[in-house]
Image (cartoon, rainbow, N blue to C red; front, side):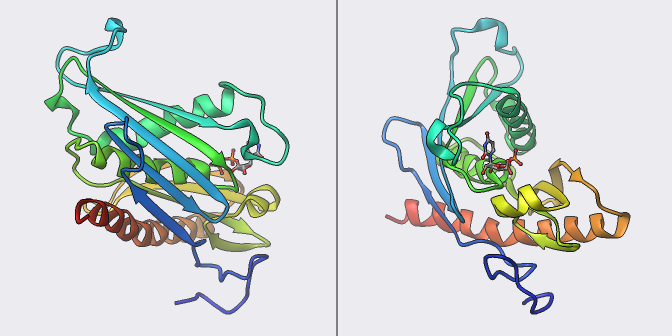
Length: 231
Ligand code: UDP
């Protein structure tokens, strides 16, 4: 159902997600994996573990440790991105681990490591949310016990309207972006960022819209896992 009939640059209504597709278990050598497309984003996630790590200082005696690495391919954006880690990818790796960790029952795996590699092959706005959504499916595919699948989606403000799931042009030209990660079964929010200017009412509207988007995407995550394990 649309909030109203006004349309955006790509003809979506204000509360409409971009087309999204998720596939689980796409890599042979990873313990778990997922491929996700949303709008023009193409994202591949590989999960390894729980496994021993040669970096002993990172291990903990009473719980497993989650490490996430977000990487954008140099060819994933119009202006070639310099390869390697930068401030932005370091931040996104950190917030991704923080968004996913509350869902994982890592205390079952003391002195072990779970590694999540998020590779952005093509980017078109909202890659941090898409990466979290795909990583969660890949973690489930790896068989890691979880309280719930974490799902992420952003809302924001463009042309003075609160809208769902910003595209790259909306992200760049818009007034605000609010990425949210969410666990539908408990209602817990595991990531909430806000970039730009929103008043209290707009913020609350953006948060509600992002959560509705998360609920829709969560069904697509589940379908991806069901179709893999029904093969
Ligand atoms: N982007 C880009 N070059 C970069 C980083 C980002 O063109 O070096 C684009 C890309 O499409 C990305 C968007 O800008 O999805 C928005 O980036 P932001 O940092 O807001 O993170 P995201 O929305 O992807 O989570």
